[in-house]
Image 1 (cartoon, rainbow, N blue to C red):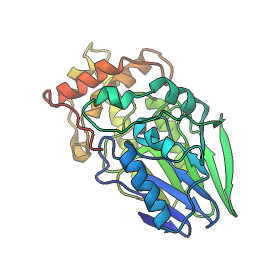
Image 2 (cartoon, rainbow, N blue to C red):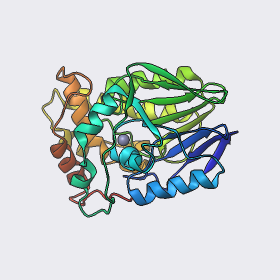
Image 3 (cartoon, helix red, strand yellow):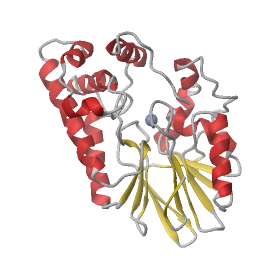
Length: 296
Ligand SMILES: [Zn+2]
């Protein structure tokens, strides 16, 4: 738990790998708004205890930055006392995904997860007030997923970026859009945040946008070179020179990101449904067959 500004807390789960997301909360001492939960009920209860231990009341509102289970599986630990808020597509995708993490990682004890989708949704922007503090929810377009939300506190210049930003980790666009992720970065930059809470990894500043952008452009160039030559995403990923991006965790995401980049080169719209199973298999193949580990 890190207090970023008066009443603004980040809850960082190291090391930020698969299933180890960040959360946070904003409070004025009377009302608390929570940003995201955790992948397992056990972890969500721990988050709840951390909110309480900070002296803040339990949340009356909960914003999901997107639908992925690591950010939403713990919703039922806070609802119905907390009203769950999210982008329109976040609600749709939460309901559609259901217990998706259980299917991907059947060996993990997520707990008895009740899929709990946002009941208040917004299409473009929504402002929530926590006492005097303005909390702006901004949909940057389809980027990491179809229903992303950036939680922006203009008076504190803190942005909860959700999975638009993986600090020290590899961006992941399989269910979103490459072009959209670049546009979302512009939107983030324009906010002029001082502090950025990424969806995964340590709290950082706006300098993290540069690495993210360089990585996205690297994927774009790789796809534009390999796709016309008839290389599969896996062949392209295997032949790629990662350079500075080799240091980012979960580098196998490159092949999943290429699946998305290829789809866009084929003219498919942002967020169009792809074969997730095929992309997942390719990520494991890129790791010489070693399965991806959920660390929750
Ligand atoms: Zn995610």
